[in-house]
Every structure is written in structure tokens, then in C-alpha cells.
Length: 246
Ligand code: XBP
Ligand code: MG
Image (cartoon, helix red, strand yellow):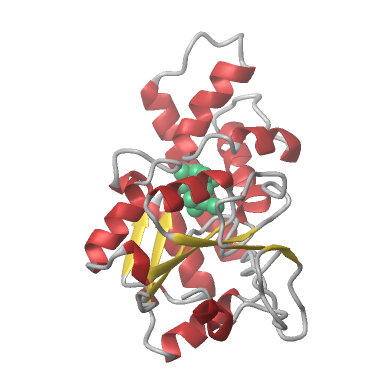
């Protein structure tokens, strides 16, 4: 059996619940600022999350929901997305969105054991960095693979291939943390074992390919709920539980 060498984390929905109260809000601020009457409700945003990448999501919205607009100019979409990124960064600076339960504890435990860390996200790099700056420390992560660094975003496996190549590791030496079907497709197509922490937007997704599915990583005082997988007597994800899968 391979030895565990690294943990690879998705960002949005996995490290923190950034979608509904972060990205969505920032998109709406950018639309209002541009004088557009577009508004993405929390419910509508659930459908828009079927497309990964902020700019791609703008195109998807126009195509699916705005039959009054023939098509959106690529420059306008890029400007809207750039404005949204700025709003998102300000939002994180003002009212930082907390990490999900257990994330910091597990990352600190992994670091103390010399386990290497990386990020694999479809979010734009400045957004990923902003969250890490406000919650953890970007320097803890050997590779921060984000946004357009690869040609195809999740569910394509490209971002995970990129991380493995940069770290010079084999898929069998790593464990991934994801929160969505798209993310799980990307990681499992790369041959990576994956722990899924569900959230309100993803709890109905198909996670049958995951190694373990829980409602959060949990804390000693805040046990997780197991959706699928074998955790023995454990009530939160720690390195001891992770080694049971290696
Ligand atoms: C989540 C996403 C991203 C964000 C918005 O990515 O799908 O598109 O919603 O990001 P992940 P940008 O879960 O892989 O981190 O606006 O920066 O593209
Ligand atoms: Mg995610």
C-alpha cells in the first residue's frame, strides 16, 4: 500500500462556505455596479453552480435565463468577473467567512506530521489567496493551483494532474477533500482517493465514488455525521482516521 504524503484541498464549499454568502454576493454587487438588473438569489445560484468558474457561470446564466439578451460580449463578461473578484476580496476582508469545522485542526495536525499540502480550485487565484490569508496561511500550501492555470476546469481532471506533477507525487500517495460532484469527478478521474464534506448546495449530489462522505470534518466537541464510509469509533476526521484509508 502506498504511503500518504500529501493532502489536497478544494476551496469553495470545502475549506469554507464561500459560495452563497461570498461569491454570490460579490457577483450581485458587480452586476449592480455595472447598472445591470441581474440578481442571483440563493436558490438560483444553486443551479448556476452546475457550471464551475465565475466567468463561465456568467455565460451560463445569460444563455439559460436571459432570453432577452442575445449574447454577452467576452470583454463585458471579463470586466464583470474582474469587478466581482474585487468585491469578493473586499467582502472577505470585511467580514471574513469562517473555515468549516475541523479544517484548521486537521491541516495543523497534517503539518505537524510533515504531510505536504496543496490547493486545487476552479476559483480565480486572487480569491483562493484571499481566503487563505484571512483564515490559514498561503505559505503552508506547496502548490496553489487555481482558475485558469489549466485549460479545462473541474469536472475535468486537469487541475489534479497539474498538482501531482508539480509535487512530483503519484495519485496513490495523496488524499483529496472536496464538496461537490464536479470536484469528485475531477479527483477520482485522476485516481485520487477523496473525502467529501457535503454542504447545503451539494448534499443531493452523487458521491458514490468517494472514500468517505461526512457532513463536515467535525471537531472533538462537534461530531460529524457520516453519510457513507467506515469510521469505526471516530467522531471527527483526524490523521489517525485518514491512515485507516491508507
Ligand atoms: C468553486 C467554483 C468557482 C467559484 C467562483 O470552485 O465553482 O467558480 O464559485 O470562482 P472550487 P471565480 O469549489 O473548485 O474551489 O469567480 O473566482 O471563478
Ligand atoms: Mg468546491
